[in-house]
Length: 205
Image (cartoon, rainbow, N blue to C red; front, side, top):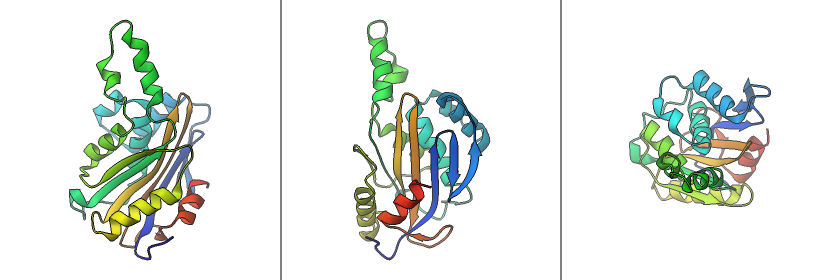
């Protein structure tokens, strides 16, 4: 259901070594393993941000997708508390959990332990961009566009936020997919009505 007052103003889909921005393929890196692929996205789209190199793979994926999502979409017109981040995935932080568990029998790794919650990716995105609005991370078997659109719409309609980064960030071993959407009350960029149908269509491009 579309609330009539919100728009998808930007989208970023990352899967199979390919980046699709607003429906158009903007980057590919054939046969690249996930760590190398994410590093190539950092080099191409970000510049210097040393904390990136300490992140787990899930956080790197969500962080890089957000960098691309917000290219040419300045957010400085919003106060920090006006932008929310609502994400979901299937595997939670299981990939990092397993790698952390492997260290426990020897010397447990604090660097890995930091990332043994899936919502840490929200924290990394928020620190980078100074977002302080509502945030939540859901875990479900599949991408639930209805849940995400309903939750974000409620936040927008109640005035809790005026913009939101929302979508799917899944990573387990070498399997990964990010599908992020910038949703705003003001029409700019793509200006697609924010609803389940448009979220699904953009995700499957």
